[in-house]
Figure: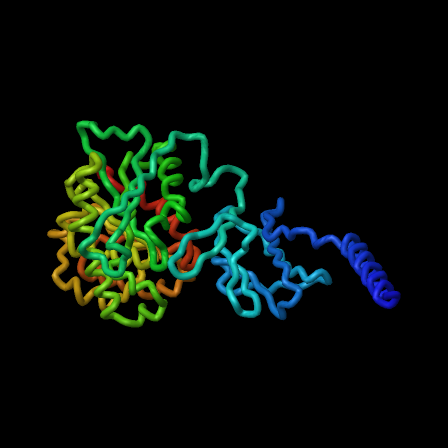
Length: 381
């Protein structure tokens, strides 16, 4: 009995000592994962004492930026000064992609989600929320008979109506069909592109006409978004474009025209998109010039040779386009194909406006494209 009491006494003493040590060793303080500094540099931090390598992948950087670890197991790096913009990033931990769980702002994606961080400017940027009248973004879901691979055949689209939109106005509004890129969902242009804020600000500055903007789901076959290797399969690309085009022309457009006060005239219709959406807008617009007088491609994921082979009958007089606008960032891998396609269009005497800007295949380029493209629409010129 004495031995048992002694053992209990020792155990209680050890427990008390452990509790005292635990009380003296509070958990490590939370790490501020991302911080925009006054000089517009960005500091990234990630705690993982067991990791052997760490990097932050920033969309505009082109390659991962290595991070260094301190004695507390916190990895960090500070960038050089960054231009006022919204940047996407994620961490790479021993080669595995990780989200920043401390940052609630992220870019929706069907393949790989990234976080977002904004570097502010000295004055509001075109995509910022400012003290101007704001339009409304409406979300619609409908039953599709065309798009393959959707749960219960439920597809969707977003519609931006400008401030003071009048459903009973005598003159219908012009309409822009704005298409997202591969891996995005239908919310891409508003969730990441800030299209509604750009339009609000351009309207307030008197740079664009009030217009309705329709942003549909950009896939004809959802299997096309499973892996990037689909872009090596021309048959899969063609199938996706064909089915999307059918969904747009026979399902989305009739629904929008019935639901909103928009014009049915080709002179009041535009179509534009980024990357995959750029391919779809150029293909759809140039093969349906009876429906669209304004066409734009932003960093279009186009194979110039394949596109040209399907447009042999293209005639500038019959097309009678008000605007054919093809833009791409000079550091984008798609720049050569876009240059080649614009050059081919010129051999057909199509009045193409070719735009080359700084930048890679990122939203920084596409937001700028939207800022510069929309003021050219629905003018009297």
